[in-house]
Image 1 (tube, helix red, strand yellow):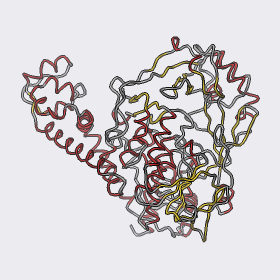
Image 2: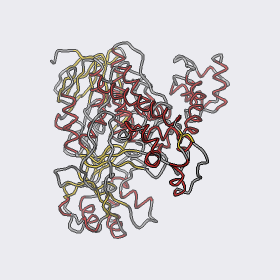
Image 3: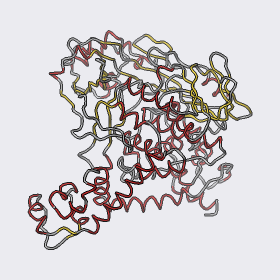
Image 4: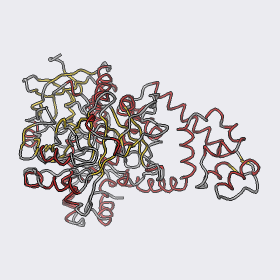
Length: 623
């Protein structure tokens, strides 16, 4: 095995690494996954949950393309909730609470079932680079593995330092050593590196908590799931609970500030803006007398609790004293304290849209090494890097999703075009076309692309085609079937909406905000007869209803996409010397030279590039 040459080597077996290795192997590349610890494959290093606002859309997109994060999440879920139900469907976001150990176990089973994938347990200390081309890796044991491409998914392990109060020690996460050597080699090769920080809360003994005084948070009454294939929905669920800090908790935490690595300057890297530590919260939001905490179980068969919202790097005795002042936590026992971790990353302006580095051919970055935070953001980058590493090896054109096709496209375009100096997290507000990029239609958007790539197997293809045919048939029925005043008027009056004076098309009725398709079927017997065989297909009925109700918005967004795409089709030569275009502003010349956008559309999204600069470029290239 050691003498073999691989098509793709993936370094790191977190969420990005698992998706990258699976994609490359499934597409036909001989792949090697290298990890420092085979027992922590797909470890949920932070909270035991997948999805959430915008993140749930990403998991659905990974699933639609043929990735595994959705399937593994479904198989290891202990609770399912669809967030933002009170808002429009563009904002609905699925989320699962997961069994941490089962999640890792399910991922490992997936990977071990792939015939093109080998494993090696060791630290990677350096890369083999020959004449600007990635040619393999060298492990800590001095073993060389040669390959045609390499995907780095190092997470928080590159020169990682763990901070707890005044204590600090090397580590990629609790109980695991940091990875050294790669950053130094890449900086010597011309890359720019930076430091980022993230944190995690203490883990608690659930037997020591009084849940009776907390708010219980149930899963959905009729739980959905992530995957579009036939994974099972949850038959039973575990509840989470909600607790709150108070002034006494805040006062105790403040006593540790003088020993906090955040406030004393020992941590240089920026932390995630949208997931601040508890000490950061009580400092930035000093006017608040309490902060919400989520008491999350770590699995079906464990008492371990994850206290979401209480991330901290304060001394362990301060953390413990503060915890005991939270209502319901008076007798709390702590398994381990929270901590902050500081690690190396590489600003993503140094990447192409395929996630291949600009400096070294055949070398791809995915996940936190690119400055992102979150399992979902990492997993989708891993999927795209694995796809493109395979296509690079096969001398095929790179696979890129644009901003109108997927949240994955938004994320990668943001990273490559704008860069980031703080951990990047996806939100629905980052997407210009979120009515098109809903969680319910990820399969119709992306599964055809997965089929074309060779990532979608025959079973998934059959399920997809069956669903698309059903949507087409239901849409035709809704468009052409008419509901009579006799069968619907009494019900419409109860909804405080206008009566029918004559037979009216179902589609027209559905466009009323008070009317939903499920209730319409119940109250219009003639429609129920027509839709009899689809009554159990809630995903089909919901999809058709959303398309009808939001038809006007969808049409307008598609028109906007067409206008925006005109710029995307105008390619910019990679060798273009922007400094010679004197009509460009100085800032534009500097930014365009640094980032080297692939298209005029990408150039238009770079911070500091004005519409006048785009006009100058269009004239210059003869458009």
